[in-house]
Image 1 (cartoon, one colour):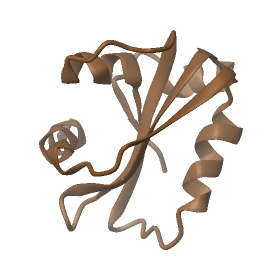
Image 2 (cartoon, helix red, strand yellow; image 1 turned 135 degrees about the vertical axis):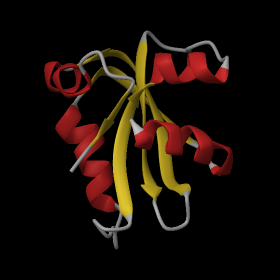
Image 3 (cartoon, rainbow, N blue to C red; image 1 turned 45 degrees about the vertical axis):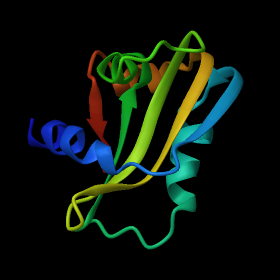
Image 4 (spheres, rainbow, N blue to C red; image 1 turned 90 degrees about the vertical axis):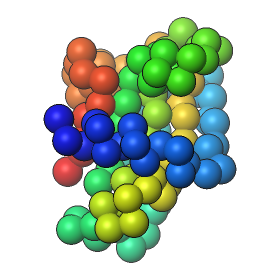
Length: 111
């Protein structure tokens, strides 16, 4: 998938990664969707919102997880070829909606 390769290549540009720890269950609507809604001026032609399985993402970065589960979410700017917004979410567990959306995928492009 082209976006996975592009994001891996662009990851070196990630700046100011914010870690947010959820005490309890990560809720897709509350923790993921609401965060993207707070980012203003997203252009569907330019920005690609995504989430990634944090454990798999950390394996790629050779880091050990600090919680049981987590995700990495961000916005990839296709014109600038960089991740412009991002944060890591660690939690004790995931809600059913997050599990469903992520499935067994390393990366899910949201639309």
